[in-house]
Image (tube, rainbow, N blue to C red; front, side, top):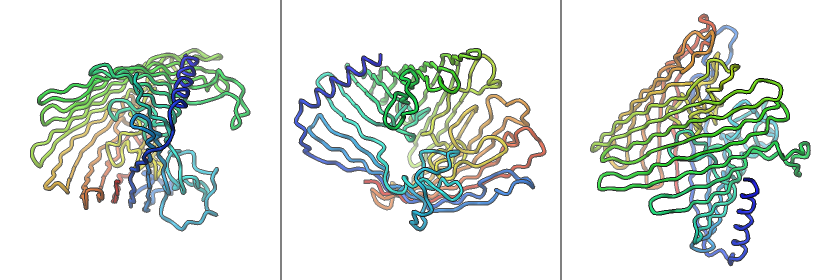
Length: 455
């Protein structure tokens, strides 16, 4: 299979070399945002031995610039970079080191991640995330290069806001159906200049994907549905843990508009095996599901979400059930299961168990929403969310994550400039007490405002 993709890439490069490569046009797009956040507790443990129940408040920003170099109507080079992604503070590079940073939190975020006074200096300047060739040929669309990874169907389970990956994609339209073929290099363990400690080409992590997308449209109905089949071969653990993970994932989805109702749903089922050299093998059987609906009636709107990620009550038995998460692109709340705002800039709220914030795992989740849009420039949304664990870990006090109430308002100052104000209050559940009922935890709240310029 690897040889097939290498041959395909070689043919694509030959075709590209045969074309005239004089840029005819350059197109820019992107956004700049600056936000201010107040979080009442960075640690919700209320205990005599805990000294981290303090609050935090800071401003942060990011400029994301996309540039398309259009060579011809069918050929372009797509790039994207993030510029000055950082917290507002004096620009003293002596306080930052490019290598020393806190790896216990989101590794893709900005320069707020510090350990012993150090941070990620690279994020303070510019970082190219995307560069790939986009070629619409007579036999379909080719995309080759670095691009967002694990993006399919709905927002559920997606990782587009995470690290990008080198990929080869081919999309072939056949009537209303588009066939998608893709390969991604998730990890490379061959000998090369930046990795001379490993000489083993059988320790790579490769991902192969294939699936159809069908688009439909009627008088009052429109949308799309698809099914992706993913084959992942992860041999990166062969050296340290002496294990190889072979997984298969089925991802059917549906999203569309049915009259006044917008509906989307997705199921991810993973199966396969983890093989060990010195221990018993484990089977993979993991299920997640997502359903989301919104309906608009004049200036009013109502909606809701249901989500499920299977947990595992015994990670040492012969079956792994917690193999998947809800992804890092889905942010249903300001605190619970939030990645882009909370986890990337604060690092999650600490408790006696796992942090509040981050990708949803081992959970049942439900949310009800209501909104009003009195003018085309102003939109207000209120939501109530509840979550509990699918599998309560052995010895835990309770399975309830808690309740969260969120308010969000967005005002369009101009067509390109938007101001957002948000507030969230989290009623912490006893799940976060862990294994002791004597542990004390506190409720929490967050305030945020954000100014976004899109261009």
